[in-house]
Amino acid sequence: MTPERQQQGQPTPALLFDTLNAHQRTEAIKSAIELGLFSVIPEGKTTAKEIAQACDASERGTRILCDYLVIIGFLTKQNDHYGLTPDSAVFLDKHSPAYMGGVIDFILSPTVTNNFKQLTAAVKKGGTASDEETALEPNHPMWVKFARAMAPMMAMPARQLAPLVDPEANQKLKILDIAAGHGLYGLAFAKRNPKAEIVAVDWPNVLEVAKENAQAAGVSDRYQTKPGSAFDVDYGTGYDIVLLTNFLHHFDMATCEALLHKVHAALNDGASSARITPRLPDSSVGLRTQG
Amino acid sequence: MTPERQQQGQPTPALLFDTLNAHQRTEAIKSAIELGLFSVIPEGKTTAKEIAQACDASERGTRILCDYLVIIGFLTKQNDHYGLTPDSAVFLDKHSPAYMGGVIDFILSPTVTNNFKQLTAAVKKGGTASDEETALEPNHPMWVKFARAMAPMMAMPARQLAPLVDPEANQKLKILDIAAGHGLYGLAFAKRNPKAEIVAVDWPNVLEVAKENAQAAGVSDRYQTKPGSAFDVDYGTGYDIVLLTNFLHHFDMATCEALLHKVHAALNDGASSARITPRLPDSSVGLRTQG
Image 1 (tube, one colour):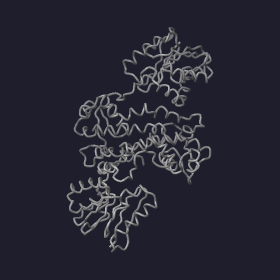
Image 2 (cartoon, helix red, strand yellow):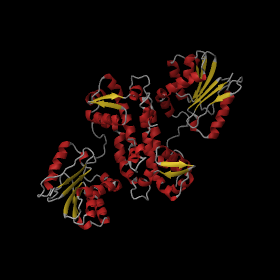
Image 3 (cartoon, chains in turn green, blue):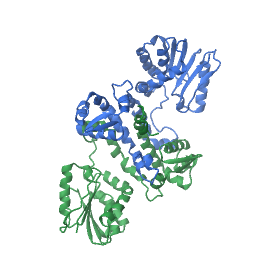
Image 4 (tube, rainbow over the protein chains, first blue to last red):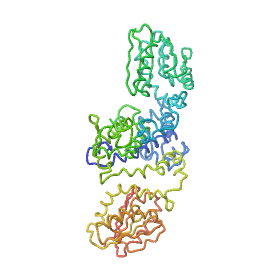
């Protein structure tokens, strides 16, 4: 019975304790990913002893962690043999093409989690209470980490977005990818459409990651970069498509509106209108000329 | 739809992300308790602005935190007015006799949470990776914090245990309360039965808390203490009841067996047998002579 369900009856402290101890779930999945538990089990190491040896860990610690992972839904257990759940097999086994374990390098990095350690101060202030330079400073190293760690998580939405915006994939297109990060959104277009040319905007340190990914995708010859702030850099003009993905949620409404004016001005003159699908605050926005 | 339910269908990263971000739930409830949100709402401060003013916080931060608390099940929201859920009203409003918010002083203290920050190292080692002195050192200050912070959580089980072990509450009883902590288990007997005399064993710094609670309960004249380790201190003999609550889970089986022999030897000579109900590892053990 989940705490949510218990709540329907008499008052119980179950949801409260589940929430007070929720941080333990995070630490458990983080440790399991760090130890590589989910990658040795499909190699046939299925007992606590075998997993411990393969992960260079103690048997006792491994058994306790694995049992907890069974309880919170990431492993199965039968007769002392642990197994992966369908989700774990797809997302947590390093052999899987959809492996996402690396996201912990970003979403559980001190840069991110330290802000939550000061949440009470942040609520009092109405903004971050961190002393660190903000994530919006030029060349903040967290965005390089983001570009590297979050790429596996963004591969699927990027693959799904391109055919929606460019279904034919046979026309010459000039595409602006703003705050490109890992570059996967723009690269998904370039890989499908051999006539697509990408111009990526981001901080220079982040664009190095995007260029690596462009090279790996074999489309470097159609991949240009414009280093700088999305708010300051000269985009140029004549774009058929502007990609503005996972970006607007960082800013207030007035800032977003000003940016969208700038984006619109960069679109192809032949555009009769722009198709905009903003979803705030968790925004993936695709702009495309109709023509 | 809970992540657990989503798991029954196609693989999704929902459970993974819910778990990776679970630490945010812990920080949110901790901040809400620290700010006293749940105590000002029943006083009629129900909008973000009113709550913010009463908690000396920003309206923006308060609104965002309250909305999140609605999502994770601790508040209700209708037309910009927040309300307590039945659980929050009972356990998180400081006006409630069952208020438990103070438990964060122990279960979310750095002494406890820092161990989880080093979980991967602990799994490798097979035990705590902390450099701090262990919780089993004499006079460790964490047990004073425990005794103060966790008392509200233990009040209910203590109240429920006493009538099970001493239903008549009218006979002279000598009761040994081992690792008494806040003292609430023994005190529950003393409050019901005016002929019950308690002997509490714990570290001297912890027994100060138990003595405070004995005084508050008006039973100091029937409350003695034996400072020291439960393993070393001379219990004396002739006890009718020995309380050994929430203790055995700290130790291995051999240590528990040796302790239970010592406990048994302290019981009343007239005892024909001892009624033992051990539940390992989350143990509340009641020993009582049948006589």
